[in-house]
Length: 196
Ligand SMILES: Nc1nc2c(ncn2[C@@H]2O[C@H](COP(=O)(O)OP(=O)(O)OP(=O)(O)O)[C@@H](O)[C@H]2O)c(=O)[nH]1
Ligand SMILES: [Mg+2]
Image (tube, rainbow, N blue to C red; front, side, top):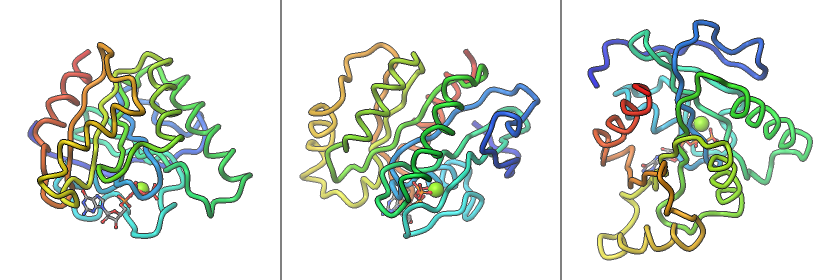
């Protein structure tokens, strides 16, 4: 993919605020601090387009980024951050659910997990939910730069313990936003979904 333009388009917390131009979209989900916003920046070759933070809970709305005036990458608030109040967590959950269940031009979901850990209970819930919605899923095991070469085999094994990966529309990649590992492969998956 040759990226000619990438811009922040709009933030939304409800349907009326989603973009209305009917372009295809790919959403990025995962627990707080896993690296969703960093993934967007590294894919687009931008430093600070999506705001990142070492503090979890940075992204609190659905943030739509428009690429080449042709499609959107949608940064979704992270789940599983303990310091978010119960009420807010429920609001986030409903916002994400409304979006994923009703958005007709949503072409796929990128689900990020941390390469260093087994998927959390919330990760498993999100994965199973995306399967149930019949969305094409790309599981990205990110922060692979933090895993020793000798431990890299363990990453897939950890994933397999929690996720039923034997599904037609599931792909898996390791990734590093720092080292740009597998950027091309992620783009290939995105292009395939956007062409559907
Ligand atoms: N080493 C390493 N650090 C990363 C990578 N991706 C993200 N980070 C760091 O992880 C922290 C969280 O990254 P974000 O992109 O803000 O995470 P997020 O998933 O958007 O978090 P929320 O918006 O809170 O849901 C930041 O300090 C990033 O620099 C990676 O591939 N490798
Ligand atoms: Mg974020």
